[in-house]
Image (cartoon, rainbow, N blue to C red):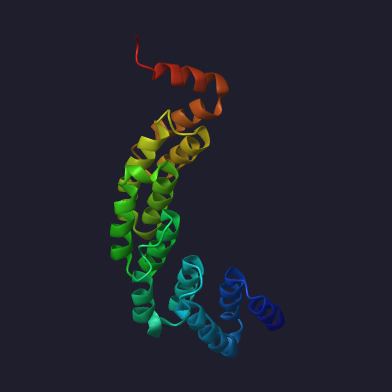
Length: 199
């Protein structure tokens, strides 16, 4: 991406474009990285900007400037109670890039909170599995629960079944069978009827 394009995005004033422009600058040599660091720091420090923009800027800044990672993590920790929960997930994912254990443990708390709903739980499980491979079975357990829950919308169950197949060798066959049932209308109807308790 050309420098002029990055600067045009930056001058747009839109937070999402500003951090993306700064990220693009990191690939434009030493001068680009210097400009990016100043731009990203300005976004991270601006408490009036959305949490998502600040968290993304912090993630990019920590990668581009390893010497600033301690400061970056401190800022991110101040954002980890953000709402809605998917914004919190984004912050914890960013923390996990620099401190995988801390990020994963906090994501696990979200994964285990059934009050947050299946979509949030599955996305947090995915973030957890990406940060630490040894947490894939924990993520798979949530995916299995959601995939088999007939009260959950079918498209969410399909995603959960696919995640289950990816995260768990032990449950891959079960996940593939469930995917077949969920994506075949006739089999899906029969599968749902089989889950209804007899009168």
